[in-house]
Length: 327
Image (cartoon, rainbow, N blue to C red; front, top):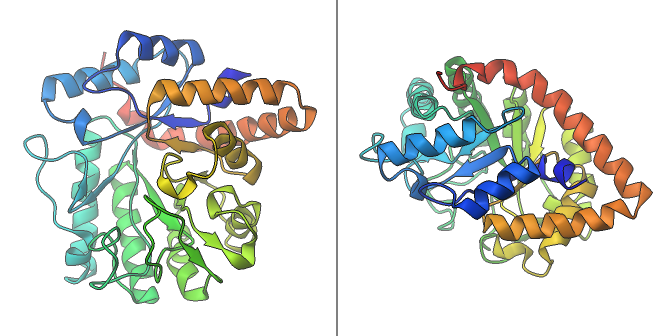
C-alpha cells in the first residue's frame, strides 16, 4: 500500500546527495519521482552524482523535475548553466525569441538528464503583477499568452523535454501569495483558461494546478477540488498528467500533511508535489497508508489512480528515453 502511495509522490532529496536514511526510504518505499532545486546544482561533480543515483534506482524510472523558468526561478544557474532572462522580458521581444528561449532552457534541462521542466507560467500577469509572479509570466493578453505558451511548449517538445504548464486555472488578478496564504477568486474567466486551452493544442503532457480557492468550484482549494480536475478533463479535454503545486506551501497550512495527500488523491490529481523534508513526507504517506488500508473506497480510488498514472506515464516515457544515463 505504501509503495502505491509513494509512486504518486514527487519529493525533494537531500543536497548535495541524499543521506543514508533518505536513501533507505527511497529504496524501501520505491519513490521514483523527484524535484530538484538550486541547492542540488552547486558543484558539477556532486550534481552529476545525485542525478546518477536517482536515475539508477531499482525499478521503473520516474520523472526528474526542475523549475527552470528563467529569471529568478532558475534552479540550474551559473557556473553550471547560463543566466537566463525573465520570461516576461523575452515575451516582449516576440514569438521567435520565445521559441529560441524555450529550446535553450530545455537543452539545459536535458544536459542534466532531467525529464520535466515545470514551465511555462501561463497566469495572466504583466509588469504590475504581485512579487510572487512578477517577471515569470508571458504577459496579460490571453490570446498573446496562448500563442507564446504554445511556442514555449513546442520548443521543449522539440528538444525532448516535457513541459508542465502552470498554475491552473490561473493566478492572474490575485494579490495573496500562495507560498504564504490561500488566495481566492469568485470565479475563473474564459480569459484565464484560454492559455491552457491553447497549450493543449501542442500536446501538453503535464499541467500543475495551484493553491487557489475558486468559490464557484466549491469550498476546497483547486489542489483538493474534484471540480477543478473535472474542468481540466471534461471541459478542456486534457488527457495528460495533473500535478499539484507544492503541498508544503503556506496556503495549505490549515491541513495536516497526511490530509493534504489524501485530498489530492480524492480530487483526482495524478502526482503530488511536496518540496519539504523527505522523511516527513514519508511519515505522512505511511499514516495515510494505514487509513487507506482500512477503507475499501480509498483502496479502490488509489488503485484507479495508480493504473491511470501508469497508463499515462507509459505514453510519455517514449519522449524521455534519451534521459536514461549512459552506462
